[in-house]
Image (cartoon, rainbow, N blue to C red):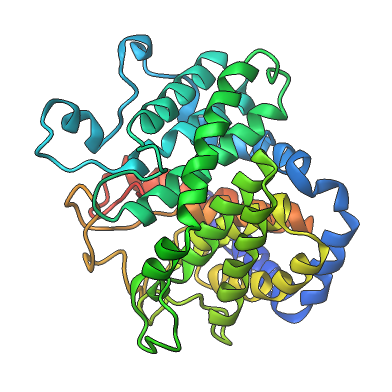
Length: 381
């Protein structure tokens, strides 16, 4: 009886905290902006380093990358589908499968594991070893796949350069930066851009990348972070175009549409990239433009978080019910990891402790779902 009452009290308390968090964002958006302005020291690469090495990230997102594979020195660096492609070139490969390299580097920096950093760099090096001289990764859906890899690599290398081990890895990082710059510049070539982001005046029906709200922030983060890392102003200037495309695309209710609908997974993923951009790349004027979008976008997402930390997938346009398949042929199912990361990051930027608590509960719900073997779980890639 007592245990039952404790559980009930815990659920009620969580509901109160979630409601309070949502109320703050919905009713007082200027409060979030004022908090962010007070925390200008949290901006830039240094601010992102603080977030990525925080207790929250160490105990959630980075916890799964505490150490590299036992035999990592003997592995080629290929991941996921690319492992089989190495031995059978008739199979598909995708550069996005190497995006985990940047995550391994970030986790290694946060957790102080230099072998994890070395493994992440090896994964990244495998990717660039399969890039053509003009920056193309020559496989199907090459543009979108490359954007994931470029963003993750730039993000990981920025963190490594800000870390105590920057001098130790400087030679290796500088080589990778030169290759990253080639890949990022390939993305902004006029013909490549026009093919993937067709002019709406010529093609009023949404086609190509324009159907997906999160890709505006993904591409902005990829180009912007690469621009900051490589000190390339052209890439940063181009990234602003994607940010403003994203701001114009948001619906009044805060949804960043995916294929004409809403989807909590891609909403969270886009917000994760938007937070990185807001903190690392954006100058004050662009941050001011982005703040209302972030406030509304997070308000919509938080409203879908249940008291137990799970996320309501009702109405999802792309994930959770087998609507689409991932690269490996499996359905895009339920995944809360990016929801947790994005909520935790916005909690840092707005100095909102209640929101970080919610982010932790979402992560715990994701881990619980996987341990229980819930059908339709998905790793989000």
